Amino acid sequence: MAIADRARDFWDRISSRERSLVVIAAIAVPITIAIWLGLSIKDGLVAMEDRNDRTRRALEIVADLKARGPTTPVDDTPMPTEPLMLETYVSNAAKKGGLTFKGPIDSRPKQVRNGFATTSVSCALDDITTDQLKAFLQEVETGSKLVSVTHIDIRRDFRDKKKIDVTFEVSTYSKEAPKGAGSGSGGGSAEKKGG
Image (cartoon, rainbow, N blue to C red; front, side, top):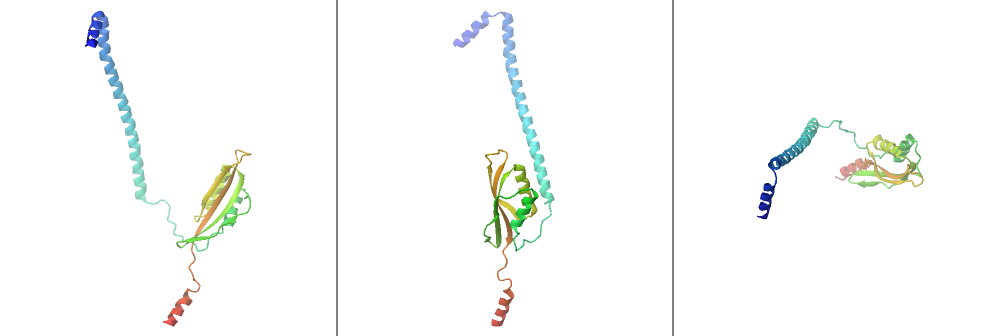
């Protein structure tokens, strides 16, 4: 009640010109706020629609690529039973990049699991740049489909901030050689003799 009385007193005190200004302000402010809110909502909806259009286009491209199938031919080359000579392979990759290993290349024991053999070596490079490391790893990874870098440890060289020291492990994969491949026919003939 007190607010209504104060508003009435204020209205009676002001001149007719000021009253018309108050009426105009009372009409203009809500309209301005409504227009501003409407434009803000419209901008948000336009941005959301743009994002949705980009997402739709991306999904259409993915669906098209999926419908086309794989772009690279399937490699039907059988996996060898003899592992790649990793020491030579890694040394050749280092020579192409002009790198020298710190110490010898250590061979790890071959591990056989589920009919597949993993052969690994570990080695270290010191005082190389990240570009040299990138070129070396690219050479190792792309030279053969059966070779991959399975572990890498990178440390910054404290003497030269642009150089790094790297220790890594490279592995190659092969099928386990059939057991008794040479004596398989002998065993079969012995069974025939026994039968």
